[in-house]
Amino acid sequence: MMWPNFFLQDEEQRMGGRTRAGVKRRKVLTDEQEGKIKLAFFVAIVGMTLTVLAVGTEFWVELNTYKQNQSLVCEAAHYGLWKFCHKKLWMDVVEEERATCGPAELPGEANCSYFKFFTTGENAHIFQRTTKKELNITAAIVSLVSITLMAMGSLCITVALSKGVEFLLKPASCFFIISGIMVLVCLEVFRHSVRWLITSDETIPLEYEYSWSVACAVAAGAILIFGGGCFILLSIPGLPKKGQLC
Image (spheres, one colour):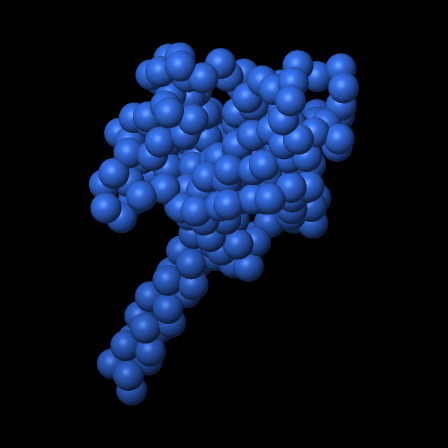
């Protein structure tokens, strides 16, 4: 009778050890920690929404020609990472104080198409100027990488909240911070592509200005970096303390 009792006690000890180890590995989040993580995640979601809005729209830069005295229409254009739109605006809807046509949001005859350098590899021609496709393609790829990193960060936070663990906050913070930096890098590459386009030919006088899609991208990059910083603070033992922002 001693041997069965011995094996039974040994099995109970091993099971108890595994149970205690499992409890140690799984750290349940408190309600306060979960609330702070959800708040930081909301901040990151705002940044992700602005990024998708910026990447998906074609109002990154507006190109405006100068008005012609005897003409009833003037020409303007706007484009983003993927799409280009050429517009003809009636002169009576353009402000008299403006020396150039625009803004591009005004109603008019529009002709929009996707850039061909994503399909045939051809450069686009806008007001006798030529794009540098390498820069435009690079900006587009960087934006897609940024969105991919956001998705990975969101997955980490979703698992952390559903499983009640906090070790995934650090990789999530890295994903969000890097994605925010990538958005800003995308903006810089796009700015260089615009400068290349403007200086490629000066036959037609042209004015350009960055539009609201760029503003969304700038805000998105800053918000994503801030949100990633909040997750870093939340992953540090004993932080954040009461009164801290995140």
